[in-house]
Image (cartoon, rainbow, N blue to C red; front, side, top):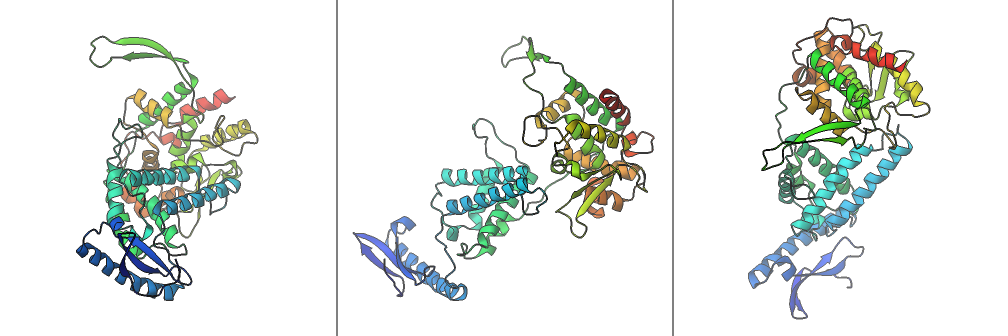
Length: 438
């Protein structure tokens, strides 16, 4: 359609009512038409209301066009915008793989989390009949409906409900917020008013519960069970009772596979550094300083001092884990030219052994030990041995206030020793691992 600079007006075309309006995103502006029936305006009053909306909208758009040089596109399909952001995320993943030290890259785990959120959003658009939603019509209510659906959603098979915590939903909100902020910075401009979306993207309050700390017996039990798990057996004895039957079925089942990344090594690094799961899994040999006994990585989450380190030995506050340093030396010899600290048999990079970790927790029959609880546990043991909170926070990569409020807990059953690994009761088992290596 040709150029047009008149006000929006209602006209009939092929027997149907249409709104003719000016699209200021083009240069020069062009005439567009929108079906009244497509906007649910069927009678005269509804069509009059729709016309007034276009009148107000055109005034705002014309002013915006003058200010931005016709740089907006409010009729851009939302699904197409999400696809553009996915392409950007995948490019950042390639950057991280080609240059791990580049701050512009995204890890594989981060990309997987983002893509899960975006896939869920696309699925919801399809299920709720919002495939044709444009960026200009996205509002906080629509986002709120999506997060409500996500909170009570089901698995892809549809036969099991998913219980998503507040922390999980906040992670999805961060992913959606990053997507929309990226799109909001794009030109032509896609959102008329980004502020109306902010309330729906706010993180909701969550009950983190008291910080966890484990006795030396609990920690050593987990490590010992992980060692036995990785040794075998090749078969397991299974006992189960089928629903509706009184008899117990007993049989032996061969283990289908062994974990690519050993649980023992992941556990020791988590327990004796207090670092995050993603940081431990992505640890490379270039981060291990055998000459000084330190593990040092770049921490993009911290302001000011961007590196964080754990002195496994030689710190003024006392040794942390000198035996772990000796184990790392043996692991380094085994790794050869592999840049990753953790093995990843057949996989492109190490992964967290979630299935094996869960199975070990079930077999020992005690309080569940997880990566985040081990992070809290490290802070508690450091405090029990007299390490100042500011120093423990420096090692773990967060503020001293966070350490005191969310991480530190009273520790019971501390073993006497000169290092954190001895206080946790892990040194005897670690020495056993060293003897097995020799």
